[in-house]
Length: 120
Image (cartoon, rainbow, N blue to C red):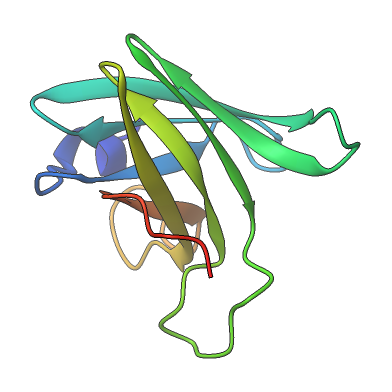
């Protein structure tokens, strides 16, 4: 674990995913949701042959798809469903770059969990 990861303390229903190594497709991190939940994210393909990022952890499973509706910088880069302790929620993620710490300039995902949104 890098120094950047060990110092990161997320607010409730937030977290971060860091690449396991430069150029690696897998990520690890945590989500703060009723306690710290360690998560793993890895590329996958769904039943409709769409590429997505599968997010798994203890009592947690979810998916992040590219946000096709992003029209503003503040909109998440990825969104998808997540289930935490059997509760169906929404997961959103934004691409970010570390500014300081042991690996400045490294890309990571800042994530947020919220209630599901009704479909349009």
